[in-house]
Image (cartoon, rainbow, N blue to C red; front, side):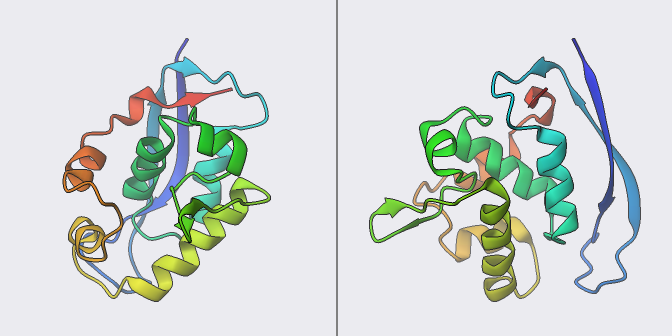
Length: 145
């Protein structure tokens, strides 16, 4: 069964100002999620509502970090981005809190430029192939309910 997810997306096209063009984006989704409490459409909407920059990249990060929203850390810690502190993954009350945390982190750390290079330079992941792996995430593999 295939679903088509439409949402308004803000693409910066290299711009770092707030006047980035808004375009309708569609993601084709071809599978159904087993977690009935989570809806990928709500996740994407929350990224946009919180004005996350480069939502397409951040969504790919969440897919990689959670194994397409199936990992133990995702299910038990509501942590879609793999954030950890003092040797353990951060526990969020709700995944929306994790999106808020990402937004605050992004606002503190990101000062412009290529977002993939930023992720490498800020040391987002220990894996030296992380950004290549993020780039290779196929959003058609997303699950929804």
